[in-house]
Amino acid sequence: MADVDTVIYLRQSQDRTGDELGVARQREDTRKLCELRGWRVVAEHSDNDTSASGKRQRPGFEAVLAAVQEGRAACVVAWDMTRLTRNARDRLRLLELGKRHGLTVAFVRGTDLDLSTPAGRLTADILGSVAQHEIEQKSDRQRRAALQAAEQGRRIGGRRPFGYEADGVTIREPEAAAVRDAYEGVLAGVPLGRVAADWNARGLHTPQARFTHGCDGACPASVRPRACPKRTATEPSEWTAQTVRPVLLNPRYAGLRAHVTEALREVMDPRAARLKAIVGPAAWEGLVSEETWRAVVELLTDPSRANPARGGKGLLTGVALCGVPECGATVHRGAAPARRGREGHATYRCRAALGHVGRAVGPVDWWVTEVVIGRLERPDAALLLADDKRPDAVKLRREARALRTRLDNLAGLLADGTLTETGVRRESAKLRAKLEEVERQQADAGRADILGPLINAPDVRAAVEALDTDRLRVVIDTLMTVTLLPPGRGVRFGQDVAAWERTAERISASIVIDWR
Image (cartoon, rainbow, N blue to C red; front, top):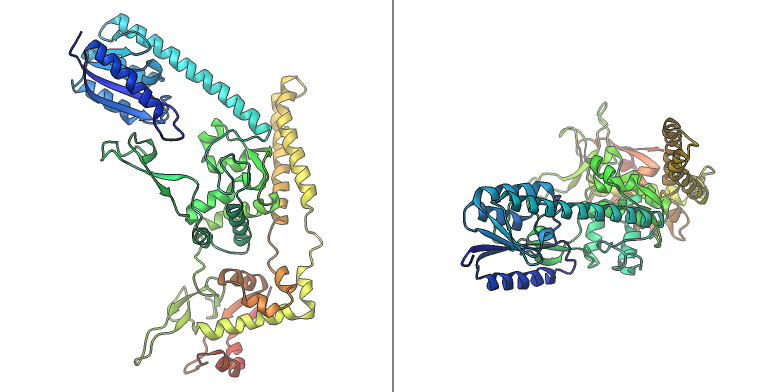
Protein backbone atom coordinates (compact mmCIF):
# COMPACT_ATOMS: atom_id res chain seq x y z
CA MET A 1 0.00 0.00 0.00
CA ALA A 2 2.39 2.67 -1.26
CA ASP A 3 1.77 6.28 -2.28
CA VAL A 4 -0.97 6.84 0.34
CA ASP A 5 -1.90 10.34 1.53
CA THR A 6 -0.91 10.28 5.21
CA VAL A 7 -1.29 12.58 8.20
CA ILE A 8 1.19 12.34 11.07
CA TYR A 9 -0.04 13.01 14.62
CA LEU A 10 2.35 13.78 17.50
CA ARG A 11 1.49 14.34 21.17
CA GLN A 12 3.37 14.80 24.44
CA SER A 13 1.43 14.99 27.74
CA GLN A 14 3.90 17.19 29.62
CA ASP A 15 6.63 19.50 28.41
CA ARG A 16 7.57 21.75 31.34
CA THR A 17 10.62 23.19 29.57
CA GLY A 18 8.84 23.87 26.28
CA ASP A 19 11.69 22.42 24.20
CA GLU A 20 9.39 19.88 22.42
CA LEU A 21 11.97 17.10 22.59
CA GLY A 22 9.22 14.48 23.06
CA VAL A 23 7.34 15.37 19.89
CA ALA A 24 10.68 15.71 18.04
CA ARG A 25 11.48 12.04 18.84
CA GLN A 26 8.02 10.98 17.70
CA ARG A 27 8.40 13.01 14.49
CA GLU A 28 11.66 11.28 13.63
CA ASP A 29 10.20 7.80 14.18
CA THR A 30 6.87 8.40 12.40
CA ARG A 31 8.51 9.95 9.34
CA LYS A 32 10.94 7.05 9.14
CA LEU A 33 7.95 4.65 9.13
CA CYS A 34 6.24 6.62 6.34
CA GLU A 35 9.45 6.61 4.31
CA LEU A 36 9.83 2.83 4.67
CA ARG A 37 6.22 2.26 3.58
CA GLY A 38 6.41 4.75 0.72
CA TRP A 39 3.54 6.84 2.11
CA ARG A 40 3.13 10.47 1.10
CA VAL A 41 2.95 12.79 4.15
CA VAL A 42 0.46 15.55 3.36
CA ALA A 43 0.27 17.11 6.83
CA GLU A 44 1.64 16.90 10.34
CA HIS A 45 -0.22 17.97 13.48
CA SER A 46 0.92 17.97 17.09
CA ASP A 47 -0.39 18.69 20.58
CA ASN A 48 2.60 19.36 22.79
CA ASP A 49 2.17 19.54 26.57
CA THR A 50 -1.42 18.33 26.21
CA SER A 51 -3.16 15.40 27.91
CA ALA A 52 -5.44 13.10 25.91
CA SER A 53 -7.72 12.37 28.88
CA GLY A 54 -10.44 14.54 27.34
CA LYS A 55 -10.41 17.47 29.78
CA ARG A 56 -8.84 19.86 27.27
CA GLN A 57 -9.42 20.29 23.57
CA ARG A 58 -6.61 19.11 21.30
CA PRO A 59 -6.39 21.33 18.20
CA GLY A 60 -3.91 18.98 16.52
CA PHE A 61 -6.20 15.96 16.98
CA GLU A 62 -9.17 17.98 15.67
CA ALA A 63 -7.13 18.88 12.58
CA VAL A 64 -6.39 15.18 11.96
CA LEU A 65 -10.10 14.31 12.12
CA ALA A 66 -10.90 17.21 9.79
CA ALA A 67 -8.34 15.96 7.25
CA VAL A 68 -9.94 12.49 7.25
CA GLN A 69 -13.46 13.92 7.10
CA GLU A 70 -12.58 16.07 4.08
CA GLY A 71 -10.87 13.21 2.24
CA ARG A 72 -7.40 14.72 2.38
CA ALA A 73 -5.89 11.68 4.13
CA ALA A 74 -6.46 7.93 3.99
CA CYS A 75 -3.97 7.03 6.73
CA VAL A 76 -3.02 8.40 10.16
CA VAL A 77 0.38 7.58 11.68
CA ALA A 78 1.17 7.98 15.40
CA TRP A 79 3.83 6.63 17.72
CA ASP A 80 1.32 4.38 19.52
CA MET A 81 -2.38 4.30 20.49
CA THR A 82 -1.78 6.15 23.78
CA ARG A 83 -0.46 9.13 21.79
CA LEU A 84 -3.57 9.18 19.59
CA THR A 85 -6.47 8.75 22.03
CA ARG A 86 -7.01 7.88 25.69
CA ASN A 87 -10.71 8.61 26.22
CA ALA A 88 -13.88 6.96 24.96
CA ARG A 89 -15.36 10.04 23.30
CA ASP A 90 -12.39 10.72 21.00
CA ARG A 91 -11.96 7.00 20.32
CA LEU A 92 -15.59 6.70 19.17
CA ARG A 93 -15.23 9.70 16.84
CA LEU A 94 -12.11 8.14 15.30
CA LEU A 95 -13.78 4.74 14.82
CA GLU A 96 -16.87 6.25 13.17
CA LEU A 97 -14.71 8.29 10.76
CA GLY A 98 -12.63 5.21 10.01
CA LYS A 99 -15.73 3.18 9.17
CA ARG A 100 -17.16 5.83 6.85
CA HIS A 101 -13.92 6.81 5.07
CA GLY A 102 -11.93 3.53 5.07
CA LEU A 103 -9.21 4.95 7.31
CA THR A 104 -6.02 3.07 8.19
CA VAL A 105 -4.23 3.85 11.47
CA ALA A 106 -0.56 2.86 11.74
CA PHE A 107 1.71 2.95 14.80
CA VAL A 108 5.47 3.00 15.20
CA ARG A 109 5.05 0.80 18.27
CA GLY A 110 2.18 -1.38 17.09
CA THR A 111 0.43 -2.77 14.07
CA ASP A 112 -1.65 -1.27 11.26
CA LEU A 113 -5.40 -1.15 11.86
CA ASP A 114 -7.91 -0.99 9.02
CA LEU A 115 -10.86 0.83 10.57
CA SER A 116 -13.09 0.02 7.61
CA THR A 117 -13.31 -3.59 8.91
CA PRO A 118 -15.05 -4.87 12.09
CA ALA A 119 -11.84 -6.60 13.22
CA GLY A 120 -9.82 -3.42 12.82
CA ARG A 121 -12.35 -1.37 14.78
CA LEU A 122 -12.55 -4.04 17.52
CA THR A 123 -8.76 -4.09 17.89
CA ALA A 124 -8.60 -0.29 17.97
CA ASP A 125 -11.37 -0.19 20.56
CA ILE A 126 -9.60 -2.75 22.77
CA LEU A 127 -6.27 -0.92 22.51
CA GLY A 128 -8.00 2.38 23.28
CA SER A 129 -9.81 0.89 26.28
CA VAL A 130 -6.49 -0.44 27.59
CA ALA A 131 -4.95 3.02 27.19
CA GLN A 132 -7.90 4.61 28.99
CA HIS A 133 -7.67 2.03 31.79
CA GLU A 134 -3.97 2.82 32.15
CA ILE A 135 -4.55 6.57 32.46
CA GLU A 136 -7.37 6.05 34.99
CA GLN A 137 -5.16 3.82 37.13
CA LYS A 138 -2.33 6.33 36.89
CA SER A 139 -4.75 9.07 37.93
CA ASP A 140 -5.83 7.06 40.99
CA ARG A 141 -2.20 6.58 42.01
CA GLN A 142 -1.47 10.27 41.54
CA ARG A 143 -4.49 11.33 43.61
CA ARG A 144 -3.46 9.04 46.46
CA ALA A 145 0.13 10.31 46.30
CA ALA A 146 -1.12 13.92 46.29
CA LEU A 147 -3.27 13.28 49.36
CA GLN A 148 -0.35 11.67 51.21
CA ALA A 149 1.93 14.59 50.33
CA ALA A 150 -0.71 17.07 51.55
CA GLU A 151 -1.14 15.22 54.84
CA GLN A 152 2.64 15.34 55.32
CA GLY A 153 2.78 19.02 54.34
CA ARG A 154 5.04 18.33 51.33
CA ARG A 155 4.98 20.08 47.97
CA ILE A 156 4.66 17.89 44.89
CA GLY A 157 5.63 20.29 42.13
CA GLY A 158 3.90 22.85 39.97
CA ARG A 159 4.66 26.41 38.99
CA ARG A 160 7.07 28.48 41.03
CA PRO A 161 5.10 30.35 43.70
CA PHE A 162 5.78 34.08 44.04
CA GLY A 163 8.09 34.67 47.01
CA TYR A 164 9.83 31.28 46.71
CA GLU A 165 12.39 29.63 44.48
CA ALA A 166 11.46 26.91 41.97
CA ASP A 167 11.46 24.24 44.71
CA GLY A 168 8.57 26.06 46.40
CA VAL A 169 10.38 25.89 49.76
CA THR A 170 13.40 28.21 49.61
CA ILE A 171 12.39 31.83 50.21
CA ARG A 172 13.26 34.40 47.53
CA GLU A 173 13.74 37.40 49.80
CA PRO A 174 13.01 40.37 47.46
CA GLU A 175 9.65 38.85 46.53
CA ALA A 176 8.98 37.65 50.09
CA ALA A 177 9.50 41.18 51.42
CA ALA A 178 6.97 42.48 48.88
CA VAL A 179 4.45 39.85 49.99
CA ARG A 180 4.87 40.76 53.68
CA ASP A 181 4.48 44.46 52.87
CA ALA A 182 1.33 43.66 50.90
CA TYR A 183 -0.32 41.85 53.82
CA GLU A 184 0.50 44.73 56.14
CA GLY A 185 -0.68 47.28 53.59
CA VAL A 186 -4.02 45.59 52.86
CA LEU A 187 -4.81 45.42 56.57
CA ALA A 188 -3.94 49.12 56.78
CA GLY A 189 -6.33 50.00 53.96
CA VAL A 190 -4.08 49.98 50.88
CA PRO A 191 -6.08 48.94 47.75
CA LEU A 192 -4.91 45.91 45.80
CA GLY A 193 -4.26 48.12 42.80
CA ARG A 194 -1.69 50.08 44.81
CA VAL A 195 -0.07 46.84 45.94
CA ALA A 196 0.21 45.74 42.31
CA ALA A 197 1.72 49.09 41.33
CA ASP A 198 4.26 48.79 44.17
CA TRP A 199 5.32 45.29 43.08
CA ASN A 200 5.71 46.46 39.48
CA ALA A 201 7.72 49.50 40.62
CA ARG A 202 10.10 47.14 42.45
CA GLY A 203 10.71 45.32 39.17
CA LEU A 204 8.86 42.19 40.31
CA HIS A 205 6.72 40.24 37.86
CA THR A 206 4.46 37.21 37.95
CA PRO A 207 6.44 33.93 38.10
CA GLN A 208 4.80 32.46 34.99
CA ALA A 209 5.65 33.47 31.46
CA ARG A 210 2.84 34.61 29.20
CA PHE A 211 2.08 32.76 25.97
CA THR A 212 0.71 33.99 22.67
CA HIS A 213 -0.65 32.07 19.72
CA GLY A 214 1.87 31.37 16.98
CA CYS A 215 -0.51 29.52 14.66
CA ASP A 216 -1.81 32.52 12.67
CA GLY A 217 -5.39 31.81 13.69
CA ALA A 218 -5.34 28.06 12.98
CA CYS A 219 -6.42 27.17 16.54
CA PRO A 220 -10.14 27.39 17.42
CA ALA A 221 -11.15 30.46 19.43
CA SER A 222 -11.70 28.32 22.54
CA VAL A 223 -8.06 27.15 22.65
CA ARG A 224 -5.96 29.05 25.17
CA PRO A 225 -2.57 30.41 24.02
CA ARG A 226 -0.76 27.97 26.36
CA ALA A 227 -2.38 25.02 24.53
CA CYS A 228 -1.42 26.26 21.08
CA PRO A 229 1.05 23.81 19.46
CA LYS A 230 3.04 26.76 18.05
CA ARG A 231 2.76 28.98 21.12
CA THR A 232 5.37 31.65 21.79
CA ALA A 233 6.56 32.52 25.31
CA THR A 234 6.82 36.21 26.17
CA GLU A 235 7.97 38.11 29.22
CA PRO A 236 6.09 37.51 32.51
CA SER A 237 3.07 39.72 33.09
CA GLU A 238 2.98 42.79 35.28
CA TRP A 239 0.87 42.61 38.41
CA THR A 240 -2.73 43.81 38.57
CA ALA A 241 -5.25 43.89 41.42
CA GLN A 242 -6.82 40.73 39.94
CA THR A 243 -3.53 38.78 40.02
CA VAL A 244 -2.44 40.05 43.45
CA ARG A 245 -5.66 38.91 45.13
CA PRO A 246 -5.21 35.12 44.66
CA VAL A 247 -1.61 35.41 45.87
CA LEU A 248 -2.69 36.95 49.18
CA LEU A 249 -5.50 34.40 49.58
CA ASN A 250 -3.13 31.44 49.13
CA PRO A 251 -2.71 29.46 52.41
CA ARG A 252 0.93 28.65 51.55
CA TYR A 253 1.98 32.15 52.67
CA ALA A 254 0.78 31.32 56.19
CA GLY A 255 2.74 28.04 56.13
CA LEU A 256 -0.44 26.01 55.61
CA ARG A 257 -0.94 23.07 53.22
CA ALA A 258 -4.19 22.80 51.27
CA HIS A 259 -5.40 19.84 49.20
CA VAL A 260 -8.20 20.54 46.72
CA THR A 261 -10.02 17.33 45.75
CA GLU A 262 -11.91 16.70 42.52
CA ALA A 263 -15.18 16.87 44.49
CA LEU A 264 -14.36 20.41 45.66
CA ARG A 265 -13.30 21.46 42.16
CA GLU A 266 -16.71 20.44 40.84
CA VAL A 267 -18.62 22.73 43.20
CA MET A 268 -16.36 25.79 43.47
CA ASP A 269 -13.46 27.64 41.91
CA PRO A 270 -10.12 25.95 42.82
CA ARG A 271 -8.80 29.18 44.36
CA ALA A 272 -11.84 29.47 46.62
CA ALA A 273 -11.63 25.74 47.36
CA ARG A 274 -8.11 26.18 48.79
CA LEU A 275 -9.60 28.17 51.67
CA LYS A 276 -11.84 25.20 52.52
CA ALA A 277 -9.25 22.48 51.97
CA ILE A 278 -6.50 23.22 54.51
CA VAL A 279 -5.23 19.94 55.94
CA GLY A 280 -2.48 21.18 58.26
CA PRO A 281 0.93 22.87 58.49
CA ALA A 282 3.21 22.89 55.45
CA ALA A 283 6.80 21.69 55.25
CA TRP A 284 7.94 25.15 54.12
CA GLU A 285 8.18 28.35 56.13
CA GLY A 286 5.30 30.79 55.76
CA LEU A 287 5.92 34.48 55.05
CA VAL A 288 3.31 35.81 57.53
CA SER A 289 1.55 34.45 60.60
CA GLU A 290 -1.64 32.44 60.22
CA GLU A 291 -3.49 35.17 62.09
CA THR A 292 -2.34 37.87 59.65
CA TRP A 293 -3.26 35.68 56.68
CA ARG A 294 -6.74 34.93 58.04
CA ALA A 295 -7.34 38.63 58.72
CA VAL A 296 -6.54 39.44 55.08
CA VAL A 297 -8.69 36.54 53.84
CA GLU A 298 -11.64 37.77 55.88
CA LEU A 299 -11.14 41.26 54.48
CA LEU A 300 -10.77 40.23 50.83
CA THR A 301 -13.64 37.71 50.87
CA ASP A 302 -16.11 40.01 52.63
CA PRO A 303 -19.24 40.07 50.38
CA SER A 304 -19.52 43.82 50.89
CA ARG A 305 -16.20 44.17 49.02
CA ALA A 306 -17.50 42.43 45.89
CA ASN A 307 -17.46 45.86 44.20
CA PRO A 308 -15.42 47.99 46.62
CA ALA A 309 -15.47 51.74 46.25
CA ARG A 310 -12.21 53.19 44.98
CA GLY A 311 -10.24 55.13 47.53
CA GLY A 312 -9.25 57.79 45.01
CA LYS A 313 -6.68 60.55 45.52
CA GLY A 314 -8.71 62.53 48.04
CA LEU A 315 -7.82 61.96 51.69
CA LEU A 316 -11.49 61.99 52.71
CA THR A 317 -12.90 60.27 49.63
CA GLY A 318 -15.35 57.62 50.78
CA VAL A 319 -14.78 58.62 54.43
CA ALA A 320 -16.22 62.09 55.05
CA LEU A 321 -20.00 62.56 54.92
CA CYS A 322 -22.18 65.23 53.33
CA GLY A 323 -23.60 67.49 56.04
CA VAL A 324 -26.81 68.41 54.22
CA PRO A 325 -29.74 67.27 56.44
CA GLU A 326 -31.07 63.78 55.63
CA CYS A 327 -28.30 63.13 53.08
CA GLY A 328 -25.27 61.53 54.79
CA ALA A 329 -23.71 60.33 51.52
CA THR A 330 -19.93 60.13 51.29
CA VAL A 331 -17.94 62.74 49.41
CA HIS A 332 -15.46 62.35 46.57
CA ARG A 333 -12.73 64.58 45.22
CA GLY A 334 -13.32 66.54 42.05
CA ALA A 335 -12.41 69.85 40.46
CA ALA A 336 -14.44 73.03 40.70
CA PRO A 337 -15.15 74.69 37.35
CA ALA A 338 -12.83 77.51 36.28
CA ARG A 339 -14.36 80.97 36.64
CA ARG A 340 -13.37 84.44 35.46
CA GLY A 341 -10.10 83.20 34.04
CA ARG A 342 -9.07 81.36 37.23
CA GLU A 343 -8.27 77.66 37.17
CA GLY A 344 -10.58 75.31 39.07
CA HIS A 345 -9.33 73.98 42.40
CA ALA A 346 -9.76 70.53 43.94
CA THR A 347 -12.99 70.16 45.93
CA TYR A 348 -14.88 67.56 47.93
CA ARG A 349 -18.39 67.06 46.55
CA CYS A 350 -21.32 64.97 47.68
CA ARG A 351 -21.72 61.75 45.71
CA ALA A 352 -25.51 61.87 45.94
CA ALA A 353 -26.34 65.36 44.66
CA LEU A 354 -24.42 68.05 42.81
CA GLY A 355 -25.97 70.93 44.74
CA HIS A 356 -24.99 69.67 48.19
CA VAL A 357 -21.57 70.13 49.80
CA GLY A 358 -18.67 71.60 47.83
CA ARG A 359 -15.53 72.21 49.91
CA ALA A 360 -11.97 73.08 48.93
CA VAL A 361 -9.73 70.08 49.56
CA GLY A 362 -6.67 71.92 50.94
CA PRO A 363 -8.04 73.51 54.14
CA VAL A 364 -10.27 70.51 54.95
CA ASP A 365 -7.40 68.00 54.67
CA TRP A 366 -5.11 70.27 56.69
CA TRP A 367 -7.62 70.72 59.52
CA VAL A 368 -8.60 67.04 59.79
CA THR A 369 -4.93 65.99 59.80
CA GLU A 370 -4.19 68.52 62.57
CA VAL A 371 -7.08 67.10 64.62
CA VAL A 372 -5.68 63.56 64.18
CA ILE A 373 -2.19 64.66 65.28
CA GLY A 374 -3.62 66.51 68.26
CA ARG A 375 -5.57 63.44 69.39
CA LEU A 376 -2.61 61.09 69.06
CA GLU A 377 -0.29 63.49 70.94
CA ARG A 378 -2.55 63.64 73.99
CA PRO A 379 -1.29 61.91 77.17
CA ASP A 380 -4.32 59.59 77.22
CA ALA A 381 -3.76 58.39 73.62
CA ALA A 382 -2.42 55.05 74.91
CA LEU A 383 -5.94 54.23 76.12
CA LEU A 384 -6.89 53.81 72.47
CA LEU A 385 -4.73 50.67 72.41
CA ALA A 386 -6.25 49.05 75.50
CA ASP A 387 -7.57 45.62 74.48
CA ASP A 388 -7.75 43.11 77.31
CA LYS A 389 -9.74 40.70 75.15
CA ARG A 390 -7.15 40.28 72.41
CA PRO A 391 -7.13 36.58 71.38
CA ASP A 392 -4.18 34.34 72.22
CA ALA A 393 -2.76 33.56 68.77
CA VAL A 394 -0.64 30.58 69.87
CA LYS A 395 -3.53 28.97 71.73
CA LEU A 396 -5.86 29.46 68.76
CA ARG A 397 -3.33 27.94 66.37
CA ARG A 398 -3.03 24.85 68.58
CA GLU A 399 -6.79 24.53 68.86
CA ALA A 400 -7.28 24.80 65.08
CA ARG A 401 -4.68 22.08 64.49
CA ALA A 402 -6.37 19.77 67.01
CA LEU A 403 -9.79 20.28 65.40
CA ARG A 404 -8.43 19.48 61.93
CA THR A 405 -6.81 16.30 63.28
CA ARG A 406 -10.12 15.22 64.85
CA LEU A 407 -11.90 15.83 61.55
CA ASP A 408 -9.34 13.66 59.73
CA ASN A 409 -9.82 10.86 62.27
CA LEU A 410 -13.59 10.63 61.74
CA ALA A 411 -13.15 8.41 58.66
CA GLY A 412 -11.24 5.87 60.78
CA LEU A 413 -13.95 5.88 63.46
CA LEU A 414 -16.54 5.11 60.79
CA ALA A 415 -14.41 2.32 59.29
CA ASP A 416 -13.88 0.49 62.61
CA GLY A 417 -17.53 0.83 63.63
CA THR A 418 -16.98 3.24 66.53
CA LEU A 419 -19.34 5.74 64.89
CA THR A 420 -22.22 5.29 62.45
CA GLU A 421 -22.50 7.35 59.26
CA THR A 422 -25.11 9.53 60.95
CA GLY A 423 -22.85 9.99 63.95
CA VAL A 424 -19.92 10.96 61.74
CA ARG A 425 -22.01 13.59 59.95
CA ARG A 426 -23.24 15.02 63.25
CA GLU A 427 -19.76 15.08 64.82
CA SER A 428 -18.26 16.55 61.64
CA ALA A 429 -20.79 19.39 61.64
CA LYS A 430 -19.93 20.22 65.28
CA LEU A 431 -16.19 20.16 64.68
CA ARG A 432 -16.47 22.32 61.55
CA ALA A 433 -18.56 24.88 63.40
CA LYS A 434 -15.92 25.05 66.15
CA LEU A 435 -13.15 25.32 63.55
CA GLU A 436 -14.91 28.22 61.80
CA GLU A 437 -15.20 30.07 65.10
CA VAL A 438 -11.52 29.51 65.92
CA GLU A 439 -10.51 30.72 62.44
CA ARG A 440 -12.66 33.83 62.91
CA GLN A 441 -10.87 34.57 66.19
CA GLN A 442 -7.53 34.02 64.46
CA ALA A 443 -8.51 36.65 61.90
CA ASP A 444 -9.34 39.07 64.73
CA ALA A 445 -5.97 38.38 66.34
CA GLY A 446 -4.17 39.09 63.10
CA ARG A 447 -5.61 42.50 62.32
CA ALA A 448 -2.93 45.13 62.02
CA ASP A 449 -2.68 47.62 64.87
CA ILE A 450 -3.37 50.83 62.97
CA LEU A 451 -2.76 53.32 65.79
CA GLY A 452 0.02 51.67 67.81
CA PRO A 453 3.02 52.67 65.63
CA LEU A 454 1.77 56.28 65.58
CA ILE A 455 1.05 56.67 69.30
CA ASN A 456 4.38 55.09 70.25
CA ALA A 457 6.40 57.09 67.70
CA PRO A 458 9.02 59.52 69.11
CA ASP A 459 7.58 62.26 66.89
CA VAL A 460 3.84 61.74 66.32
CA ARG A 461 3.51 64.62 63.87
CA ALA A 462 6.36 63.32 61.71
CA ALA A 463 4.91 59.79 61.80
CA VAL A 464 1.45 60.96 60.72
CA GLU A 465 2.79 63.24 58.00
CA ALA A 466 4.89 60.36 56.65
CA LEU A 467 1.80 58.20 56.04
CA ASP A 468 0.59 57.85 52.48
CA THR A 469 -2.98 58.84 51.63
CA ASP A 470 -4.43 55.33 51.89
CA ARG A 471 -3.01 54.65 55.35
CA LEU A 472 -3.91 58.08 56.73
CA ARG A 473 -7.44 57.63 55.41
CA VAL A 474 -7.75 54.41 57.46
CA VAL A 475 -6.42 56.18 60.60
CA ILE A 476 -9.04 58.93 60.19
CA ASP A 477 -11.81 56.38 59.66
CA THR A 478 -10.63 54.45 62.74
CA LEU A 479 -10.65 57.50 65.01
CA MET A 480 -13.60 59.59 63.90
CA THR A 481 -16.54 60.35 61.66
CA VAL A 482 -16.05 63.52 59.59
CA THR A 483 -19.06 65.49 58.33
CA LEU A 484 -18.57 68.43 55.95
CA LEU A 485 -21.02 71.34 56.16
CA PRO A 486 -21.48 73.99 53.44
CA PRO A 487 -19.18 76.91 54.39
CA GLY A 488 -21.60 79.57 53.22
CA ARG A 489 -21.50 82.01 50.33
CA GLY A 490 -18.37 84.04 49.72
CA VAL A 491 -16.27 82.27 52.36
CA ARG A 492 -12.61 81.93 51.35
CA PHE A 493 -9.93 80.14 53.37
CA GLY A 494 -6.86 80.91 51.28
CA GLN A 495 -4.47 78.68 49.38
CA ASP A 496 -1.65 77.86 51.84
CA VAL A 497 -1.07 76.65 55.39
CA ALA A 498 -0.34 80.16 56.69
CA ALA A 499 -3.75 81.34 55.48
CA TRP A 500 -5.46 78.25 56.91
CA GLU A 501 -3.86 78.81 60.32
CA ARG A 502 -5.25 82.36 60.36
CA THR A 503 -8.76 81.11 59.50
CA ALA A 504 -8.63 77.85 61.50
CA GLU A 505 -11.65 78.79 63.62
CA ARG A 506 -13.80 79.41 60.55
CA ILE A 507 -12.59 76.17 58.90
CA SER A 508 -13.39 74.08 61.97
CA ALA A 509 -16.86 75.62 62.29
CA SER A 510 -17.97 73.87 59.10
CA ILE A 511 -16.37 70.47 59.88
CA VAL A 512 -18.08 68.22 62.43
CA ILE A 513 -15.88 65.61 64.15
CA ASP A 514 -17.58 62.74 66.00
CA TRP A 515 -15.09 60.51 67.84
CA ARG A 516 -15.66 56.78 67.54
